[in-house]
Image (cartoon, helix red, strand yellow):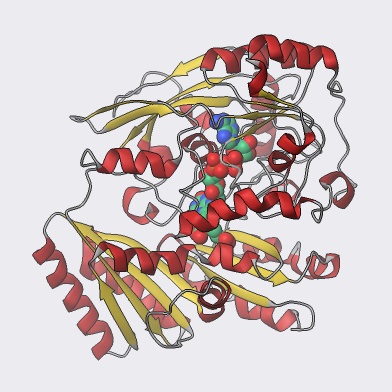
Length: 499
Ligand code: FAD
Ligand code: 2HG
Ligand code: ZN
């Protein structure tokens, strides 16, 4: 069902484009870099590198690539290139670099920080046709594929062979593994399988000048020199275009259970998280929370069924293991204890796939539900557990209901990652002034991170200093200068303008 929501939004973007203000207008302070303007000569050269039908220039074909999933930013690119091979990506970049044409790499365009669409007229390089699965080594569990493979297609391929992807997120029906790697995406199972950085064994990427960097290692252990793959993991298309990936995949679990719980106070959420870690141990595979207004966005706006009554907080606790009876015993004892002590007020457990899917569609549907409110101010922050939720009531007090529709918080509580969302009928610069930079200052005071998993993209460049020291920013600038001296790769993203 969620896949349908994501697809529906993707395809219906055209209807909304007219309403999305151009980024160059809304963010008039951002100035276009000194890049070449696209000309007929450039298009002709692109048509020599790629077959004509993979060079899109008709405005009706190009427009949906200019608008992001959240409909908050809109670029003005006139061309979309759709390569199928690393060699084609290399030839495109070599030419763009020679001509000083700026390039915006785009995967599934589900990014939430405005990184995947152009700011001005950058050439869009879409990896959607780079969707070959190269192979799976069933002994080591290493999957090798092109960057444009859709995450859910990889999951289906693997599940037929007894394996699974080590990451899962609500956008799986549309996002691509290259986009996941380039954003170092988190998702709902990070608590179990760790950051994607650990599961990605190798990467092939193309530098701004067209040089192909082959780090497509598929070994679990390799300490020969600098770990160059990390330059491409999480750098959001600013250092190279990821073309192939080798990812270490765990075996599919034999038994999965999901508990959907209702709780009275946020302190109880924290207590339940602690208990789950202690009592469920190695079988805990997800620990998520939503406040009532977050769940309501999915239930009311997407017309989904709520499995238990109304509570101020909800949690989803998932277990995955290799022995169903053992897992059930552990989960039952954990739940009995939680209910007896009153830390959890009510709950229901699913072990059949259809019911599990229904629970997850509520959690994963929140993002889409919130978007139906209108415009969303979205913050994705890491905070110490003790202060995880306090910014939500703080902002509820600062913003009146005349100004906003909803201020809510949910997210990956097990990983200390809060998704703070504020919805308004349409973009409102007055609300923006109340919320920013307040949210980032608050996060910084608590020694949190201004981006836990979505990245910096276009939206947060001026706030990166809240989470990165000056010396780190200087080194990032030097690396960018070394790898992309003309700055053609995803300009206006990640690094602040003064860098
Ligand atoms: P895009 O959006 O196309 O691009 C994202 C960034 O990566 C851009 O800067 C782009 O230039 C760059 N890029 C893309 N492909 C390449 C490439 N091959 N080489 C170099 N650069 C590239 N994120 C999470 O971390 N956790 C979540 O739980 C989560 N849930 C989501 C749920 C929903 C409903 C939605 C809409 C989004 C969610 N996201 C989440 C955000 C988003 O899905 C992820 O950031 C995802 O990894 C982006 O993948 P994509 O293919 O759509 O990339
Ligand atoms: C999630 O965890 C995503 O569902 C999206 O990271 C979060 O919409 C959001 O704020
Ligand atoms: Zn998330």
